[in-house]
Image (spheres, rainbow, N blue to C red):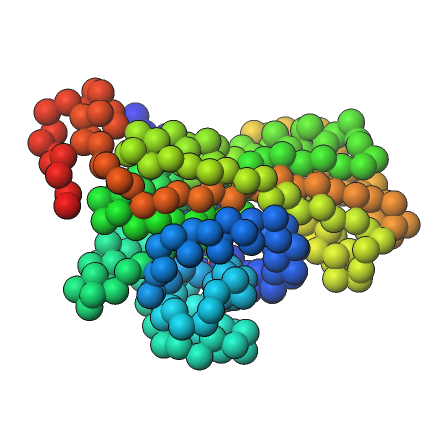
Length: 309
Ligand SMILES: C[S@@+](CC[C@H](N)C(=O)[O-])C[C@H]1O[C@@H](n2cnc3c(N)ncnc32)[C@H](O)[C@@H]1O
């Protein structure tokens, strides 16, 4: 019998204020990959960049800052409220070329790429902070779409579950475990997304370059960073608490609240440092697409074609 679905299994809208709060930390974390982005863009010279799960366009704005500025943009998101501000944000960041907003699920990507190709254009697909929100079938579809069409993909800022806090706290591990479990509800990949992407991409004949892009946050750095840290701590405590409530762990719930108060106090004193781990993945265009029977030996005989040229 299938397990009963709970509210935690439902995908929740991403708050716009969270996206704007994290944008400077994202941009700082991604500095290390600027040369990788330029190299990949230099290799493929895409005329169209498609940002899947664009939200308010923070990831697109960052990639735009690495480019010449001639590229056309397509922004895909299923959340109208977020997507509605993305194009204006890209304009403010200096993008003058055509920007198209597509209010749809990411499963429309194949059609969008086919339209680009029909117009004779070459494409690059980008995502940021998206892969951990996907289920494995969604991720596999995304990789099939880019592999079969031989389009490169940059998937930035996927959380890996790693968190280092200074000073450490005996309850950190309980919070991390409960938070990660919360992220996995609804069969979402959560902290497993980076590893599964690497495995599924390799199975499709796409090599992957992985670059760690952690946030390094310090309570004494700036008011904006302090605000991000406070929000992050509260969100973690809330998610961990929801997970423990789901397990009917009442003692755990009190422990989480005490942990949050200790952490917020350290933040007030300017005495807290956090490292939140992410990974950026660079997937060049597939040169040879493996048939599905090779990707998954148990499905031999599915008739998946080997020549997609
Ligand atoms: C964490 S936000 C990241 C937004 C943006 N890329 C950034 O870096 O600020 C994830 C975004 O993916 C979108 N999203 C999640 N699942 C999606 C799906 N199945 N189809 C389209 N958009 C999706 C959400 O609406 C949200 O805007």
